[in-house]
Amino acid sequence: MGPFMEQFKGYKNLIVALVFLAWIIYFKISLPDSTIPRPPKPRPASKSASKSTESPSLLASLPQELANLTHLLYWPPTPGDEGDLLASTSPQNSTYHLRGPTQASYALGGYLEVILVARDHRGRPKTHGGDLFRAQLLGPDLKAGVPGDVQDLENGTYLLSFPLLWAGQAQVQVRLIHSSEAVGVLRRIWREKRATVDFRGYFRGPTGAEETVICNVDPQSTGAKGPTCQYRDVDSSELWFCAQPPTLPCDSLVGHSSGSYLKVTTPHDEALLAWKVTDKVLPRGISPIQIRMAATGNSSLALSPRPACRPGLPAPKPSGFYHQDVWHSLFCSARSFSTADSILGCLAGHVVHMMGDSTLRQWWEYLRDTVPSLKPVNLHAVYQGGPLMAVETTQGIVLHWRAHSWPLRSLRIPVASLHSVAQELRGLAGGPHTVVVLGLGAHFTTFPPSIFVRRLAGIRAAVAALLAREPRTLVVIKLANTGYKSVYGSDWFTLQLNRLLRAAFADLRVAFVDAWEMTSSLALPDNIHPGRLIVRNEVDFLLSFICPT
Image (tube, rainbow, N blue to C red; front, side, top):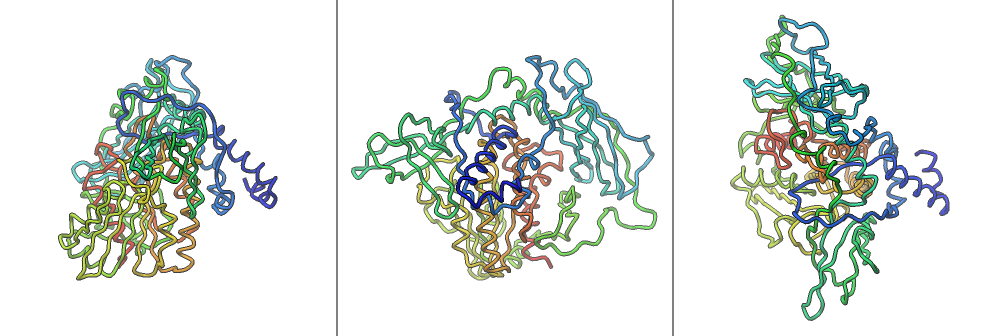
């Protein structure tokens, strides 16, 4: 994409470059999205393609890694099953075994390598890759777990690699999240569909009479037969569209809410994405192993000296692991904040601004519920959208959360409450007592990646400006976590969103909390809203960046 960036000097060349970018996004890649129970009568999805509305200046400001979406979002080819469900990957028939000979015990700090062979429902080995497998090394008795690296060799076999990070027993567990054929369905939907959900816009006239229409990220997805109302965010230049109300003007929009989940699948698609073949544990192929401590060491954990947690540190893969239900970072010396007093001591004198979705709101709720003196202030806002605020006056702590703007699946909320993240960031002075936490992803899985890239462009520009005017501001990015497993939201798509998130902020001095790894390391059921154990560790890691020593 580099040559195209140079063509942005002239208007005509700008148009050519944007058309080419849109072609890459819609025809070379496509991604899945976010779930919630599907309503019984979905509305047919619009088949019309819409033109790209990315702001060229914002896209031009993105790092080169994010501009090259084709490379960034690469996934091995996923040939279809030609209507034969039995030819798709089977979690019951797929097998795995140790790469080398079995050992009586394995050295702490080493690696365990495993070969996985994908097989179809007839037991035949697959000849191509593209399946989404998730591998873990678990120590149930030690409440330990670490995600394994899954390398797709693109020939039906996969190389799994696990670091041996604790002494004691450990066992391999592998799950098939989606077959390659199911991934192919998700990819096809993103090539053909602009959006898989819609929203409602509520307009009110001077007499109080209301009119309700469909709204969405582009005019075609509103289903409008006539004119549409267009709304532009002044800070990010993002656009939002609503079908024009029958009688009321466009500037009378007062409310927003979720709408419908659109019908985007065939019966065959639904069979490939059915729960009986989705997110299933493969039969155990390896007996539990024993990990021995080093002869010269006295530690039961493979933790080398690490620096204090700070923004900008490179993170290895995996970035950490659990032991005794505590997350241990492998790239910085994370701390544990097990008492309300330790949390208060860390947050004293800080103003924390959390902006994003409900998985980030869980952090606000955890702190509110864990620290008795942190008192919520009733701002008479709709809880799903915020703003929410809690204060601790004796320690000078202010804790904010608010949802990102549309597209936001929620109950009806006032449009005036929908502040974009870029808008909020541009209103912050920043400084050593300001903490910004951003959590995006779950509400963008129902759209092509171009929509998320557009959002990231505006936020990245605002973060860069904030850090330029006040470099002592701490900015933390929460990656999207596991949980979704449907055509409206898949872990496969979440993986792609996280690639975009990392690429967007790779060259800025920000910190990352890898919620994907933290929610995929233990033998716990996936949940888009993780339980308290996970949230506690996520918040402890956040606090480790606020108070590194």
